[in-house]
Length: 448
Image 1 (tube, rainbow, N blue to C red):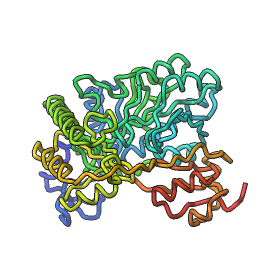
Image 2: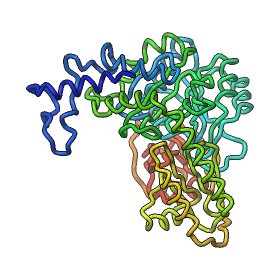
Image 3: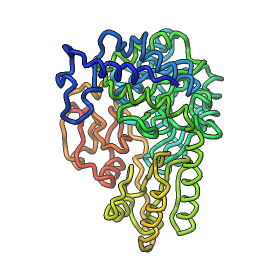
């Protein structure tokens, strides 16, 4: 597997060239990696108009993932989500479809701001019995009913895996979308590794049209490294606009450190990654089994993520995380109900043992019966775009009941809005704000 971006940059560094271009550090060290930090100049290609080393590297990635086309993002999956919705808007205009995306309610807040920026409206797909605000799986029957009873939307959008490690039935959902002639877009930010399991279950393997992966979340890439993948079934017109869709929202100064990271990951994936991943899955499964036998409640089906529903063991997720912080163990995510750990082949086998010892050393307490509050289905007042671009005021949540949310001001992780832009804040939303420690909300100044 060639690494054309890495090779070019190393060759450039070896030439001891006179750097009369950006960046301003001129390759001299403050942090130590400056020599590798270049910009777009002759021979370095141009991201989003790639014809040279970047295009070659992206084609390598596409072959590894089984994609018709893969594009790099140096600004995470957030940029890819904006590009997907931009393409959905183009698709709607070209095919006479409603400028609406039907989406699972646990979409990342970037989805909402992207909908506002592109002028797309949102039809929310609510599960019958949601487990929590974060776990909000879209079922095939629910999607079938929606598509059978509504005018065709521009696309269907789901998040899989979610923060808690729940995987949607992407294969069945894609079959529903195909029957109705609707695009399926997947936020697969947490699932870049899924194609490389012994039984591949990446969204592209299961029929999605377009998806994004955050390489930095589950692969050894620098933070901000991501992919935008297109399947063989994606409309040709969208493939033609793919680079432009990213460039509309992207910086014109992409990080070549991140691009080199993506390039190097191609070799990493091609060189025995599947076997190493299989061993990580085996260790994760074994750890889950031992922790369950010890009394911990395990949630989620994702193979390299450990999600503990900690209240059954007598602790909130926040309290259990704080307990383990004393052992210098840091988690991906914790809230009042859950504690989430993520493993990769870079996790040392001894680290599994270290985590198990620390968890099993925690004294079990009486279960905490509290259930997380759910925000229900807030009343929609206006489109996300109208709300986001309206004059707004930042108020204490106690003063926001009856007001319309202007911006989805939630923390990350997880960045799942309790109320969406343009929805009215009610008492059930207020209970959620209190439960998750949200103190203020940005609300529309006008009172529609």
